[in-house]
Amino acid sequence: MTATLGKVLACASCATSAYGDRTFNWAYTALMAVPFVVLVVVGTIFVWNAGYRLRWRRTNPINEETT
Image (spheres, rainbow, N blue to C red):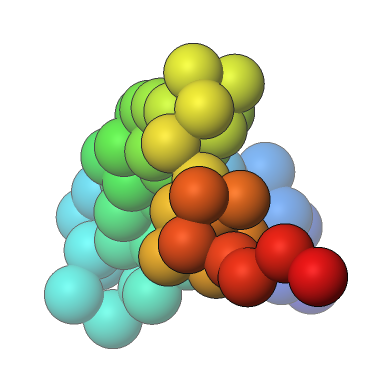
């Protein structure tokens, strides 16, 4: 019972077994990736609001035939 109690009371961020504990590595991977994801999302919003949309899909009234 004391061994189980020792595991329960152990530090959650202990790096002594980082190679075997994948949750320890995933946390740092997520912390490194989140700023890039936020930058891409904010950049996409700025570009969309600036008007750089799918311009090739827009219809150009100059090139259309009028009846």
